[in-house]
Length: 72
Image (cartoon, rainbow, N blue to C red):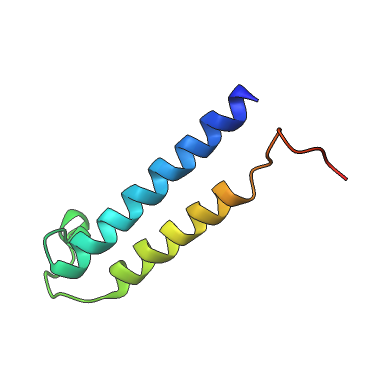
């Protein structure tokens, strides 16, 4: 059961990180394209990507089993 809580906590941490990156990318504060040498033109593709990854991380947390409930 302890491992399950660790994985859920890790998933929540990853989800929060991606949502923060999505907000920072949306406002233009964080431009990941500059890290890879691309143009500095602001676009919303990275914002959408970070938001989708955050939702997927939350789904990952949701589908981690709960050891307190018996399986059917």
